[in-house]
Length: 66
Image (cartoon, rainbow, N blue to C red; front, top):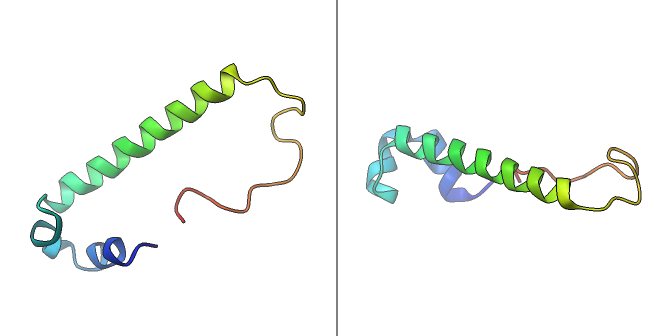
């Protein structure tokens, strides 16, 4: 995890000083970004021609939290 983000999660009262928005606004921003990312990924997957069925093949090692 990013050291700045880790610090913010451990010290939420310092969020305003570090990035200029409140902790609650940051959490909402992250949630909205994750929703948009999932929607974009879904739209991309719908248009894609698949040679191997979804779920087949090698499993992903990385996740979006890394």
